[in-house]
Image (cartoon, rainbow, N blue to C red; front, side, top):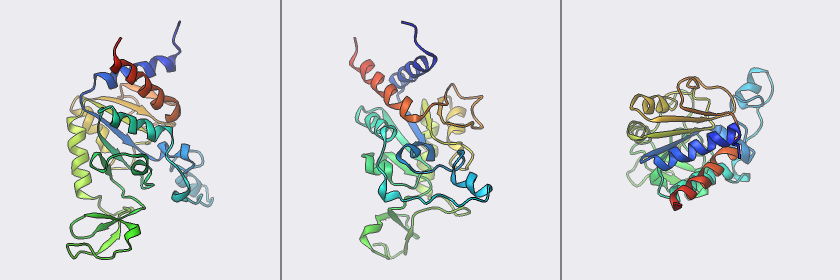
Length: 233
């Protein structure tokens, strides 16, 4: 049987995941579009519509569920293959899908979390607290333009990007820095770079494997093949 180009690339991704000792996944808004949330730079994205003078589509985070792309990353965690997950998303879908908080850096915050302005500790917004146990003020954890990123998450992301041997981008245009610096760091330190994104990125020419297909077409199947490889012949 002759494999299609997509099948061959998925097979390669599965093999690279199998070989990886320190796999880092990096997600952007594109992973959540399959849950019904708009992205930013796609044809109907928030910033695209804004540039065209159209109203942005509202984002009701509470009404959406994690999709097959999110769950494939959870499966990597269950297989002991996920070293770290870096996300630009604030939609809380990674935590809701079952990702362990210790394996996740949400660089732009989380709509369901408050962050202490003093010690950066996070608490669920549902607690309705306004003061941290350290005495600091609890504010929204979502990072707006011009605001600094949370220092611990940023430091953890740089460290894991430097140490990984496989860096998989899922659904990011890789233009919003400093978050988008992470795959560049991984490349600089010798990691393989895989980009799964519908739409071009600045790193397309230097990535080792490129998918224009939907994340739901790629990641779940790659993880399923990884499981077969881990079982052995």
